[in-house]
Amino acid sequence: MSATPQKNRATRRVLAAVAGLTTAGALVAAMPAGAQDRGSGHGHPSRTVDVQLLSFNDLHGNLEPPAGSAGTVSETQADGTVKSVPAGGVEYLATSLRTARKGNPYSVTAAGGDMVGASPLLSGLFHDEPTIEALNGLDLDVTAVGNHEFDEGATELARLQNGGCHPVEGCYEKGKKFKGADFPYLAANVTVEKTGKPVLKPYTVWKKNGVKIGFIGVTLEGTPNIVTANGVKGLKFHDEIETVNKYAKELDRKGVKSIVALIHEGGAPASTSYNYDCDSPGAGDGISGPIVDIAKGITPKVDALVTGHTHQAYVCTVPDPSGKPRMVTSASSFGKVYTDTTLTYDRRTKDIVRTSVKSANHVVSRDQAKAADMTALIARWNTLAAPIAGRPQGFISADINGRGSTAPEKPLGNLIADAQLEGLAPADKGGAVVAFMNPGGIRSDLVYAASGGEGDGVVTYGEAFTVQPFTNMMNVVDLTGAQLVTALQQQVSGSNAASPKILQVSKGLTYTLDLTKSGAERVVADTIRLNGEAIDPAKTYRVAMNEFLAGGGDGFAALGQGTNKLVGASDLDLFNAYLAAHSTADAPLAPPATDRITIVQ
Image 1 (cartoon, rainbow, N blue to C red):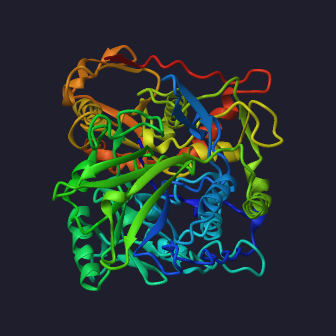
Image 2 (cartoon, one colour):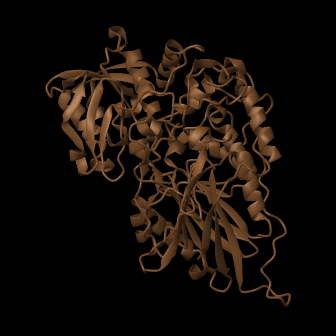
Image 3 (cartoon, helix red, strand yellow):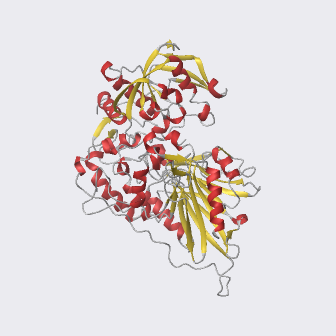
């Protein structure tokens, strides 16, 4: 599940080590050269042209290969067994895309949003300028905005598009001004409240030798529920179907008949293998989730949907409103997979021949050569980040899985919640008796193997930051026992009914989650205990959580009802303090047991 939310607060970090330096300019994207038609064999252009659409989504600033299980994809083998394949990293993504483009004079590369935000330290420390620079170098032609593009607000998003050094931290590399993205960010369904106009371009038209393909970009309508309030201030988010249909009609009137929708919303395939046949036994039978209804509602004028947000890999056909099959794709996350779709363009009708649309997902394997320009880019930014990134914070005895864990209760989730409780339990720090952590805020695993020269088992500042990159401020609030119980029920009901968001809880809180039931009843209310005692509905409890949850984010309206708020340290500071207090080289921290939530399936 991609969840996510929260805003990056790099401005709160002291960048003394890199102060006074300026930022790298973006690489200039080179369009594929040597365009020719697929000839008829008599020197005349044929009526149809095959256009290659390469796409990916949810990169989240992962320039280096993601560590641990978060850096693998599942692949179903011929004998039915499932193999875990290491994948991702922009050095390999660049090679994959460049190799795929060979022999395809008509090739366009598009993305489904969340290119930035919730990024590892290498990108997040520099407000994702390194990622925009890398995307320019990858020759990205267009992307939709995702919810994470709004983590730092519309003004910062406009800076990523248009360039200019950071308003607070300035330029990161001496003599270099950040040039911005040389591809358009599309935000058709995000308008400025005061003017009603889109915050960025709603669509763009890719053209080559008379071939024209329109791209419309939208993010999920529910973005305000999963981004901090400051990130979406002054903005309005509109229905995905209505917006795409509106602009498809506009493009059609302008003579653009071939249209692709880039939608930052997705679904869940029945299998997590990237090579799963989503159309077995019938069209779209193997996928569920919000994208199915969206796909069924989008006008037949749109020829293909590139989607994202759920971090899943799928290539499905879902029928359009006229009943015709239409391709809906998603390419996992973190640059681990890319989709290669063939769109056959008819020069006479100017439309895509939908019956001949073919698509497949491909692993971004780490067995191929690295792209030298991306290696150089990573090395340059790593040099700037090194004084901060390499600082040891603590020691672990084995991998502690977070993002890579599919279980409702994650070892790293327990560790984070315990760190928050310990840091905010003292009376002068808030007097917390329990802490909650949203699962989408855990962005990676803590990996035992060294990421650099620090040695195995050493947790560096960069690794800790990659786990919790939002630098959310912690809040401690008063909630009644009744509100606590309601909050736990909201994990599996309301907006979270179809796709539960299981909070990670601090030690002392236990309950049973019965997945055979439906809705709020899945949380068995009479099993909820805090330090062995039943929750008293009338009693007041001091509860610690990050500011995103304290604002009612992720569908937890009950957590937003807290009173008597005390603002504490950042989540990252508490996490690092806990690592320092509870581990040494001789006595490293072991992965915590996952025995707080009893699961009935």
